[in-house]
Image (tube, rainbow, N blue to C red; front, side, top):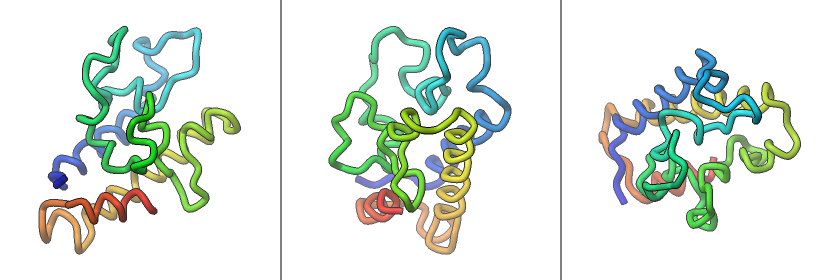
Length: 138
């Protein structure tokens, strides 16, 4: 599957901007629970919906989900965020909200740099299945 790099960069930049401006702590997130990264963001195809009406397979973030987690109920929770393999799923169990948001911000910045780099959007403009595997392994 090919992915439009410029669009993917825009999605990641939008997610980073949302995170940095405190969007996860807005009135749109119920006050009775901690915010859910990616799921409570405008990036999510199902944000603010009671039922998942759009399949996660249509989400741009699926490019970073390891194939063994592609069919998980919430696949974006399984994106490896760093070289230690920490994911939102693991950080929700062991990290503070600040640690989670810091890890996600670092991951977003790294992915944006990677996609905009010499092999990124300026050269080919598209990323194929090999790019997906490389992106998921970092």
